[in-house]
Length: 223
Ligand SMILES: [Mg+2]
Image (cartoon, rainbow, N blue to C red):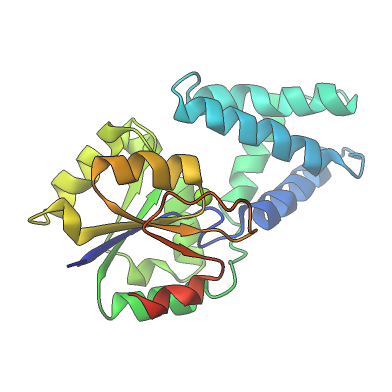
């Protein structure tokens, strides 16, 4: 029987693309930069491939923050200091709380029946602050964030820490909900935790999760 939910933050509870685009535009204003229209699309591609590398332990999150805006600068042909940009960007990102449709209602609903913990790859303080600003923190019993744990989803070490700290009697009491097949579903299912894939963009028909939804509120049908 499920007693405890682990839920991803970016692109599950908060809309990462809308948050990051806003944070990028605010940072550009601060640095008095005029960025070409398609800059965010370049960032999105570069960032996604770096996070995939991190899931495979080929780069650390600090490594990502060091290089990603320099890579964007090169791609768009607009010279700027990527590390200075990153500082503004992370600061703005920690204030960004654009929600995924149904996220707050889902947390409210689940919190009446289960314990809920956030399980996220990202910077700890930033993720906690965003949950507070989004008024989602009151539904959470705690946070598992890769920066603090020292390992990223889907590494076993990440879930070892969750399992140990939550103190459920058995792994079968846990369910992980998230949008990323690689970080939230595949390795997690192998670890022995039930999984629910939030396939928001109908990205793929491949489904290795126990449950799949296209809208967050569909989760009410089985939890
Ligand atoms: Mg996510």
